[in-house]
Amino acid sequence: MNANPLPAPETHALAHSARLVQHIRAEIAAAGTIPFSRYMELALYAPGLGYYSAGASKFGEDGDFITAPELGPLFAQCVATAVAPVLRALAGETVFFELGGGSGAFACDLMHALMQCDALPTRYEILEPSADLRQRQRQRVGATLAPELAARVHWRDVPPEQAWRGVLFANEVLDALPTPRFQLRDGEVLEVHVIGTDDDSFSETLRPADAMLSGAVRHLEHYLDAAFAEGYRSEVLPQLPYWIQAIGGLLHEGVMLFADYGYPRSEYYLPERSDGTLVCHYRHRAHADPYRLPGLQDLTAFVDFTALAEAGCGAGFDFAGYCSQASFLLGNGLSEHLQAAQSLPDVERYRLTNAAKRLTLPGEMGERFQLMGFARGVDFSGAFAMGDLSQRL
Image (tube, rainbow, N blue to C red):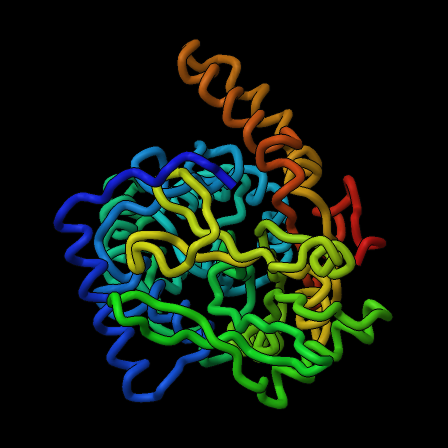
C-alpha cells in the first residue's frame, strides 16, 4: 500500500461523495445493516452517484488507475492475434462481446487490429452499465474508427438473450464484482456488514453468514485441506458460477477470455493474507479504507483464478489455458507488433517500448495480471502456448 496521504478532493467532489454517503446511510437505516457486498455495489454502481456511474475520469494519468488498454494499442493487438483464428474459423455472423468498455480505447484498437488480421466480427458489442462511460465510449469510437468500423460497434444493457457465436472478453471486470467478505470466529463463518456511525461515516459489524456464503467458505477449506484460523478475513464470490452462466451461457460456439489481477486459490488464501485482498484506488494511490471518499475511489478485490476455472468449466466450457499477462502477450505476437512499429517516429516508438515494459515486467503488470481462457466448439489452446500456469490451480 502507498503510505502517502491521499490528495484532497475538490469541493464539488466532496459534495458528490456526501450525497452518496447519505444514499447508503438511508438504505442502512431502513435495513439496520447491509452486507459489505451491497455497500460495494452502491459505492461503485449506485445510479448517478457510484464511482462507475458518475462523471469523473477513471482511467489513465488523469484518473485513479491505468489499465492495459490505456497504455497504447499493444495489448489489444495481442488479444487480436489470439482471437483472430477463432473468429476466422466461425462461419457466419460473429460477435466480439466486451464487458465494461472502459474509455473505449480497447474497442478502437482491437477493431483496427482485427481488420488487419482479416478477422472482423459482424458486431462489436459492449455491455456498459455506466451511462457516462457509455457516452465517452461512443465519442471515442465515432472520432477514432472509420465509419464502416464504427457502424459495427453497439452497446448493450444486458447480456445476450439469444444464442450467439464469437468472443467474450473482460479486462479488469471480475475484480470489481461486489464481493461478500467473511470472517471466522469460534469456527463459525460470519459475514461483514456495514453500519452507520454518528459522524456520518461507516463502520463494520459481523452477522451470521447465509447458507450460500457459509458453504462457499467451507468449500475453500475443503479445497485447501485446512480450516481458516480464528479471525481470518477475506473475500469470496459464491455468485461467480451464476454470473458466468448469465454472461456466457448462451455463447454456444466461441471463447471467453478474462484478464485481471489475482492468484490461484492456494496463494489467495495464504495464512498470512489474513485480512483479504480488498484494495482501494484514488488518484494512483492504493490504500485499504473502503469507507473513505465513497463514490470517488475504486474498490476492488483480487480474483481467485481457481474459482474462475471452476465456474467456467461448470458452465460447460472447456478450459483453454491460464498464464501471466507477460506470457500471454509474448506468446501472441508482442515482439512482432513492436518490430512492426520500428518505422514510427522516435517519440511514438519510445512510447510503445515503455508500454511493452509496463505490460510485461514482473514489477509492473507482467506477473500481477493473468489471463484465463475457455472454449466451446473451437480450439483456443494455442493462445496459451507460452508460460502455462494451470498446474498452480
